[in-house]
Amino acid sequence: MKSWKCIEYCGACCKFDLNERAHLADKLNQEDIDLINSMTAKDGWCKHLDRQNKKCLIYESRPYFCRVTEFSTTFNGYLKSGDKFLIDCCKQHISSNYGLKSDEMKRFKIAVSEK
Ligand code: SF4
Ligand code: SF4
Image: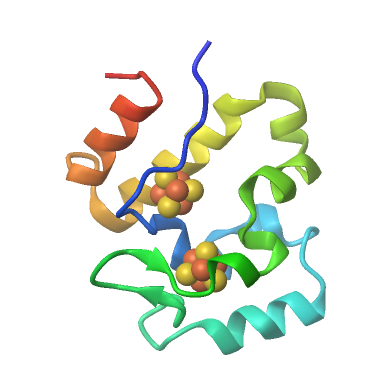
């Protein structure tokens, strides 16, 4: 069974477009949405992302919805499919932000043993 893993130099999930994340609608309250809006730069990327190194600058104090292993347990998809759900989410973010043939996608597939 494949295990989910976050790879370094990615950050693909740090770009927000709540219109494209309909599955979050019932997970986030207004406070969360306000926080997301305040964290989001005009181009959609999180202001806390070090874009050069693709690292979170506030990793230790990042919001709960950025903590994949905790936040994912609130999703039926995760409760049903486990890591496969997380892997599919990452692939979706990586694909839409960097492309299916991106270096990030290649590295992610290797990391989750899906070459
Ligand atoms: S998209 Fe997945 S692999 Fe990339 S930074 Fe986010 S959690 Fe990590
Ligand atoms: S706070 Fe950190 S982990 Fe969360 S979206 Fe911003 S850069 Fe990514």
